[in-house]
Amino acid sequence: MSITLPARGTAHAVVTPADGTVEAWVAEVAALTTPDQVVWCDGSAGEKQRLLDQMVESGSLIKLNEDLRPGSYLARSAPSDVARVESRTFICPPDQADAGPTNNWRDPEVMGEELRAAFRGSMRGRTMYVVPFSMGPLGGPISQVGVEITDSPYVVVSMHVMTRVSRHVLDLIDDGAQWVPAVHSVGAPLADDEQDVAWPCNDLKYISHFPQSREIWSYGSGYGGNALLGKKCFALRIASAMGRDEGWLAEHMLLVRVTAPTGRRYHLAAAFPSACGKTNLAMLRPTIPDWSVQTLGDDIVWMRPDEEGALRAINPEAGFFGVAPGTGVDTNPTAIATLTHDVIFTNVALTDDGDVWWEGLTPEPPAHLIDWTGADWTPDSGRPAAHPNSRFTVAAAQCPTIAPDWDDPAGVPVDALVFGGRRATNVPLVTQAFSWDHGVFLGATISSERTAAAEGVVGELRRDPFAMMPFCGYAMPDHWAHWLHMGDVLAPHRRPAIFQVNWFRKGSDGRFLWPGFGENSRVIAWMVDQLDRSRGLHPDGSGGDEGATLSPVGLVPAPGALDVDGLDLPEADLAELLAVDPHAWQAEAALTAEFFHEMGGVPERLTRQLTALEDRLSE
Image (cartoon, rainbow, N blue to C red):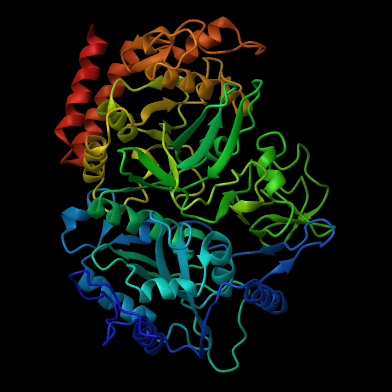
């Protein structure tokens, strides 16, 4: 087998294989990292189980009670390795301007030298695993493939869940498919006869991306998106740069299918920062009669224009890597039903009968637990039992609401794009953009409260355009320009409508004004109603103006257009949910102007949208 690297116009940043093959690349990485052995993974169930058994035997995993949680395991990370490390995440194009003001840029040659020094001998005493994987169905028209090298068996079994690991990926590469080389090491070499620890890692960390050569090099962390390189590193940072260059989009979005009582189906892709109800919407159980929502993806969406000028989307992942705390029977019963078997939990608490628990799983905590650090815990301990960023890793196919064709290689046509943040004031419950450019403006100006999934002060307001601030592999203003361009190439009658939502608006007394959860289906129903009106499909034959009222920030539901029957929702609360205070929004517009100034290079079409907003507010 001779697998050739596709030409990309630049040498590899850290190691350059002499003959350009995957085998030579693996050999070069092995020569640099000096593992005890190299294992090529095949993606089989037997391979996964052998690694799980090996980790249980070594103490890296705890097998949960087979009767209560069959096929499931608990991992406990080092306290220093519990989340993405944004301060050590680098984008390394040759030109700093291409990384933009929101990314940590490093010169690729300088970063290459640092990485070679860090990786030299980093896998000594360990096994190097070569993991060929596909993002999206193997061989699909929107899918992409990669090869991850790692010295972490936890990463290998997690990649089994989150991607399609298969030796057939190498056949695709052999036939000329472009691929992404990704190298990961926990950075904890072992001396002869040195005893390993349950969660090896290193205080020095690099999560480095080279958009020109499509490379990823990650060192020092074994956790989540730092180590599962198919996820944020490939599926967003590298893929977003690929999409810019090749005319498609890689976005931090969920993907759902909504079926109306008429039987018509609609596909919505939605971008939410962490802790803004993203998973709840991805697994929504409608409370209104005769509506259904099916899950297609919970975190990442790749979208390409098709031959008819529509935007077709796939979920490139094969699993869910979800935040556990706050996920419960009341908040997300579908997620709980997904987690009944064959799950890898990380940093949650262990019950006395060998099951798992986290804050929000049940209304009342158990009387005794072993917390995520391995210490005894009671409700009086004064600390969380599960880490705030504790996770579950589970196959998407286990989700009860998963669409039967969720992994169709052709994807689905996107009817609507939704942007949402977590705002206590100003932003209405739902608005519809006036136009594609206005919709891109809404996406570019998302802000939300900072969460435990990212570094920083929890609760601090965080600008998060398109929910992509930590994940865009190139300059954010260029990302907005790419979105504007994508709207230009789509057929006008197939271009998705764009909406903004905010489930978290509060009254002056601090109450959430909207009940949320399954009641969010009422907002989705209004969006679908707007789509039908724009397409001449509404039963009463009316157009979009009949269901919406003009506001300075977008179209909001007209009186009576949002179905609130059966809700104990005072009229005053509904009015406040949809209210737009011109004075407060003038201050918001001023903050947006400052943000655009900080970004630099904002497309003129978006600055015109800001000016238009300011004009509407002054009328």
